[in-house]
Image (cartoon, rainbow, N blue to C red; front, side, top):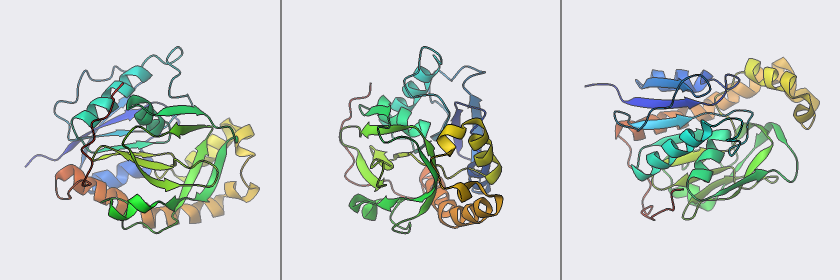
Length: 251
């Protein structure tokens, strides 16, 4: 039996697959990575059993400077319509929201940066990926924009005090995470060095090497099993969420 194949859309070299790639490959998933800045996106999703879309420093609608963002939104829209398991992270989550009728904007409360908590919402209790998460898992935040309005029919799965739309599901199996779960301490430190203005919004010790190493051990304990459940969804070993048949406006 052939291994399931995921299309991985990478908008920026600054946000690689990192730990997420390790976890997916450990689950026997084949990864087809497309660096959107350097190579064309595929025309369609034929031959793929799922999609991952990573983060980046650009905005979800910055098509003038990054015209390939339209390709990312098109493929995410197609993934939802085809009911392919999809995991979209940070910018990826914003692209997923924009592709399916939601709204993205610059966060009016400024950057959200650091090792912070998100809280599960009521709908998470019935979700196949979120149900087994702790109620307030640790995550890595590093973003300036927010998903202001969720797509019509989306399930709201997690929130933070600063920006409420932290995690959501569109359709039965397309997930957007505003936060990061894939990073390493070195990646986070590189972001802080490149964007010291945003980094200054976090508590200073959040960029200490020892603190970040412990935080990433905590991330792994929670989020590797989450990715394992996503892999089961891709393999067809886990049923998608029920009651998600709403027809969405795919834009």
